Length: 118
Image (cartoon, rainbow, N blue to C red; front, side):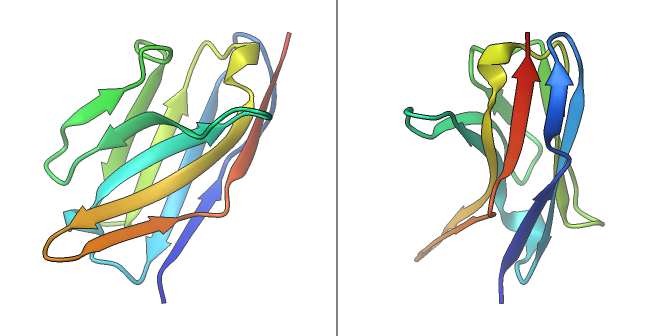
């Protein structure tokens, strides 16, 4: 059974920091591309950051220079370090594990709320 469990969300003031974690089980973590997505009320879910199996990263323009995604293959965990948070970062943040071989594997966590007050 595949599980992705996010933690680390909460309420923070603008300019503050949070570190999200996503612990996984039931997958061969090291071969998956891991991503963080977010969805604000009334908006579509959007990609925040992703890290490939080889460690290559990409970020949404809105978070470049402020957020850092990383992975620990020994712990089957992906992280999102969020610095200089802004009220517009307020959203539910979701962890995603994606792999495409002959078949597509696409798993999601339950989400964690991040609220940034001004």
